[in-house]
Image: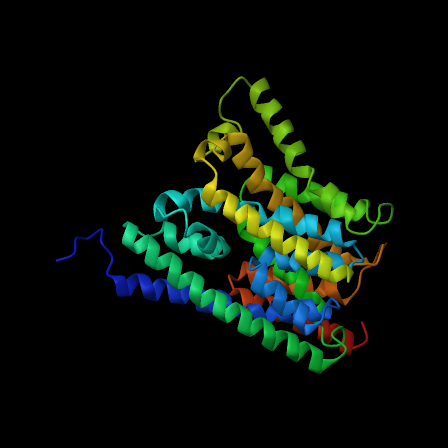
Length: 240
Length: 102
């Protein structure tokens, strides 16, 4: 008899597949956006195979489409990928993988696998959740990237079909759940101003990187304010 | 060639940060300031990217059908629509506005 805190393996598999399938289908949006940004079908598929972290992939093709250089475009994509290091940190304790397996598991350390794995109460559940989410998402994400890329190529003029609006809509959908407090709203607002304001004066791709400075600046200002109030209810307090 | 270099650098960089999380001792990334910054950097980048891809044409700021598409995406998000519906709403509205000559 399983205890209440134990989830049956089949329940974990079902939850994991639900996330893997739902998110895996959005590879279509990436394939469409990538080809719409001027990349080839092969380049789009290689990105999904080797990068396999959606926000970074969208950022890269968006920056390349805007005329950014290879390295500035890659830098933006890299910064968006940094959060995965923090997921790995949590997962490495929960998965407790042998060191030899970690280089293989690393490729699947992303938002969705972390979310499913962290929701499981037992180590067995964490491992099943991670593997099933990772496998289903990886297979579908790559298949749907190919379909989206082929479809966009067949359509020809991606602007007439409105496909150039897919990129910003994706970024907005990724951004929305992250903006919860006044600090996050200030960061987002500051980044928009910097990104748009500097666009005409700096080389392509660079304004986005400068806009990232909104994060440390807002943190610094928020930190000073909470210290001046003399309370400990500022930035630090919101740490979980 | 430029694109392939960007793909290579991104693939390598993104893989290495994923691996770093699994290999690095917990203490290094557990500092509150580092965690806080790591959570806020994506907010800044995504906000800037959303704005640029909606209002930029090369290095010129413009207001065109994409803005209407973004408004549709905002409405879909407020209605808690699934991810693909949000993207589809933006695409359809943008195409529609262009079709009627916007």
